[in-house]
Image (cartoon, one colour):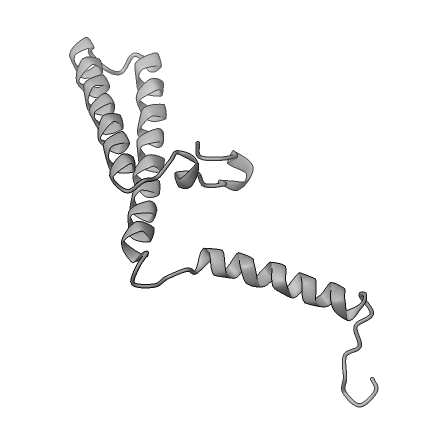
Length: 114
C-alpha cells in the first residue's frame, strides 16, 4: 500500500458528486424531522404499523374461517370489527392527508404491504 491511502478508480469527480447527491437526498427523505412535520411523520409511522397489523389480522381471520375453528357468531363479530377498523383507518388517513401509498412498506421477500 502506498502511503496508507486507498485509491478509488470508479469514475470522474462529477460521477462521484452525483452519487453523493443521490445518497444525500435519500437520507434527507428518510430523516426529515422538524417541528413543522413531526406530527405528520408520527401519524404516518403509527398508521403504517396499524395497517400492517390490520392486514395480518385479516389473513389470520381468513385462515381461521377456512379452518373451521370459528363459530358463525365469532365470524360475524370478527368481520364487523375488521370493517370498523378499516373505516377508522380511512378516517385517520383523511385527517392526516395520507394515502395508501404513503403507508406502503416494502417487506422484502414478502413484497409490498399494500
